[in-house]
Image (cartoon, rainbow, N blue to C red; front, side):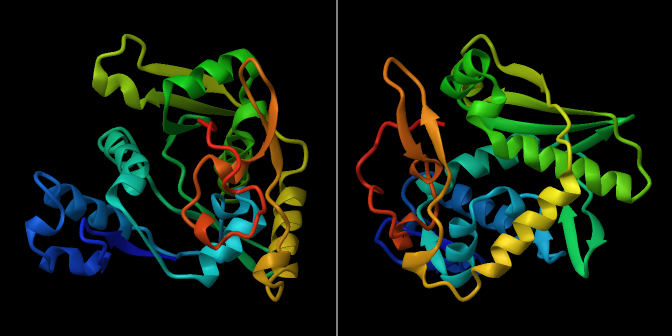
Length: 256
């Protein structure tokens, strides 16, 4: 699991120890950012056996994240920290759980508004361009799965949900680019409970699988003048240093 951050000298600092380090460990203006990153990270609690997010990532990444402790730099952590900051004040995050075959499934929708679930995504201008051109399912299938699992959880808790929306907030809005927001309605998948069972079975079946034999992450096309096949983990993955995927360093132009 992600235990903490790496300071500018290369020291591995656990999240709960960052407050005891000197500002000079992080560089000019970075200490308060590192502190806030740690605060957000330590708020993430394990309240279920499997979360909607965990069920939406490749099984290889799931097990590498569970088998290894790792530390990343503030630069690597920046995207999720920006996302957390954007969420402040606009979400009403409340964890919700449901039992399925003896396992506790959980998720934390950003906002439930009437009969709709709204999930806010901090993303890039290039991702929005690809979504508009190629449709969300070709770019972020995990968003569709995550929202559908949220809907399943809410329905299991007697909250009727009919619509699901991703609201994209461009991280580039901090740079003054004109268009900041984009709303996408996500379609309902046919058998979400079956999807959950399938993902849990896949995860559990590889509990004892050696790292180098874990299934390769799914392949998706990258977009541009040339369509290439590349693993979705090429975009960015905290545990890619532990990954034995042969082509991990071959493609460096993924920008999801």
